[in-house]
Image 1 (cartoon, helix red, strand yellow):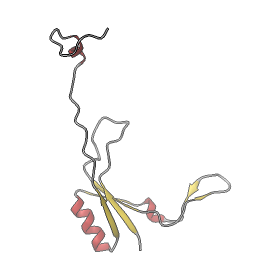
Image 2: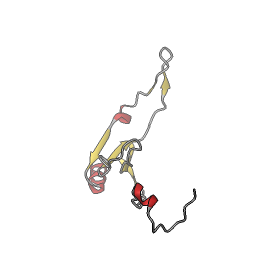
Image 3: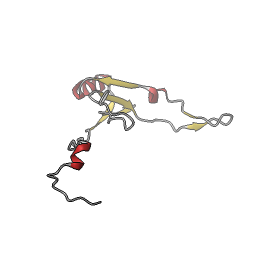
Image 4: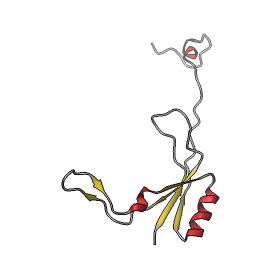
Length: 103
């Protein structure tokens, strides 16, 4: 019996956009250990389900699919994004600064 996790991916650290973070993913858990190829040194596995990533628009669709297919699943809730206060560079040189100059 395979098991899977349903989650919403986080924002890519190397990109500023929020693309591909609204969807929900279903990824299967590892069922067999990874093996090192003696000739090339690559790490691989004979478990083909590790390569499967299913995308859904909502969490409910992903859960419904897992229940229909008889897949044991766990849902990982997304972390709340940190809202940062937007500042411009020119705010550093305002006459009515709230913090004193440090240099």
